[in-house]
Length: 322
Ligand code: SF4
Image 1 (cartoon, helix red, strand yellow):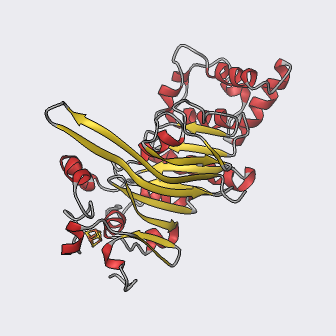
Image 2 (cartoon, protein in one colour):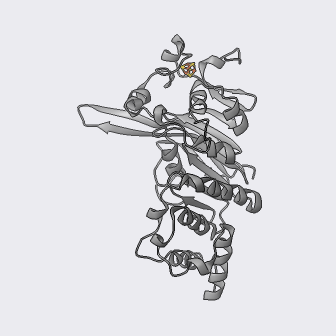
Image 3 (cartoon, protein in one colour):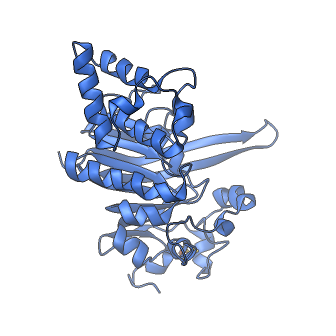
């Protein structure tokens, strides 16, 4: 199986407003991508681009309006949390909300071991949990009996990752896993993802608005804008030589003095969000420095140039762009 996850023509529409003024927003608009074994694939874009909605559909937390999601070639379309299985695990943005403050963190690990019948005796369970904790730089001894508030955000996110590893997943879906972690610790978390890919062959769907960590950790990247994938390909090509005007805007907005920081918030224009989602033709036309008449009228096709998919009229026919 050369594709662990296949997302085909996935679409999610929401109705907004009341009966008199009802509008339909296409939050995810006919997107397709796949993830190979031992690959880190990133969905990147500013807040409101559709990346988290995509992750939620992949996890079965939300039902798609149309399209298919296949894991190991098998479809999953039910509106259930069917994806949290031994094969697929998830890591979320806020490690403090992952754990109940009144429960010790080790109890979650023992529960998972029990639910999946991974050990017969307590000593076996402890050995298994310790092995997973060591992969993230912790030990059973230093975490047993402790409550979530006894750990830092970075430690707790490492613990979330160790917990996801208990069932030996092939795919981890990580939704903004470093955005609530101190800037100084972000790289240690994304380094863990590289280690899991290289040493355990785990694939990761990394959802982020942080292009700097995306560049550092990803094999391939898809840039999303208002529900569309506007550019997708090997991370080096997409971020070092962006073709789509929106990808260029994002790349140029990364602060140069400290590339570990997020991009500037100036690209987050919330008031434009609804207008852009409803726009005919190219959704970026209102902000694009290269806009042409055709952009306001026709939705651009997906064009592949040197392994990179670009959704932009600049690349029609000539395949050139500028
Ligand atoms: Fe800009 Fe037109 Fe390309 Fe959209 S299709 S990104 S408006 S040039």
